[in-house]
Image (cartoon, rainbow, N blue to C red):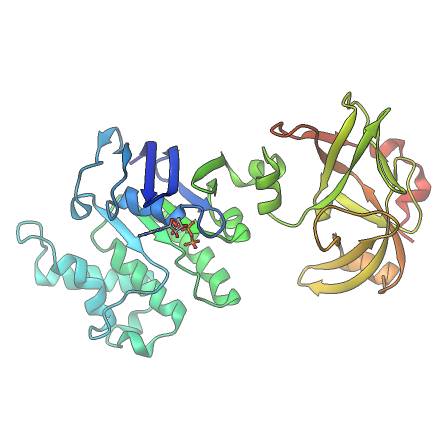
Length: 378
Ligand SMILES: Nc1ncnc2c1ncn2[C@@H]1O[C@H](COP(=O)(O)OP(=O)(O)OP(=O)(O)O)[C@@H](O)[C@H]1O
């Protein structure tokens, strides 16, 4: 079932929570609504569910206008951040709740309900906990039960509002993978609200980035990460290093720092955005860039080593003026970067913003043209 949202507006008093939002949610795919707190994600989800009404605009499911349809008639599964399990019911009773509450004509027989609950317990890998009460479950287990309950009536649409928001990082990661597998098996049309970039990029087929009640950009995760349309999306999707300066004769400079920007015709102010993985570190400047930085901190973050550096003799954008570069463990072992060391950032690919609302131009420094000297890290 596809979901189409067309020109939705929603005000709370004077506050415009959603501003002419239009969207297509493809059938059988997992779409993430991603945005900072207060950007309107939950409000949009609640309007799609029928828990909230829009001031204007339409919601359709596979072409059928459901804007005025009551929530119980929309055949939607819903999972919230805070479990929302019935405390006085066992796990099995919680899962059966939606089926037990169906109108008599649609309600399966007791035996069928029992069979279905058994299957769902198997699916969430908790058959041994059928007779426990919610208070006797961990957070991750509770969310799996909540999910089983929400899909017991076999909805075509599954809406999840920060379902893993209250869980710790490890459980969250496991559940993400588990949800993805479940989704691939059942092919619900799912919408998943999160303010966690990593979660949205890892889990979804399509990401909708929201800001202040507007849809900023919609794309699949890899495309979105590689080609953000705006500074907001760039910043929001993860750490970014910025060189803000002036372009003259093909070189962007600020203070003592400079980098060539080949094939860019623009003259005047511009910002170069560089993701941590688009920059290498060297002990000498490159032929195309002189970006000296002093190491502030080195930390191991799982599969990578993160080096934080402060611009030396020039300023970077942002209040804390810290750049971040990710290096491999092999590079770390080879060069042993230490706080206080001077390094040079060597950009390999960058994204240049030249106007206020323009999309960034990609700058690619052809590695083949770089001198072999600067390929050596140390
Ligand atoms: N019932 C309400 N009455 C008044 N204002 C509301 C109401 N619901 C939401 N808002 C406001 O609308 C804006 C959008 O809220 P919403 O919950 O949709 O944002 P969100 O992106 O889901 O944020 P979060 O990640 O914090 O949940 C917020 O500024 C919020 O304060």
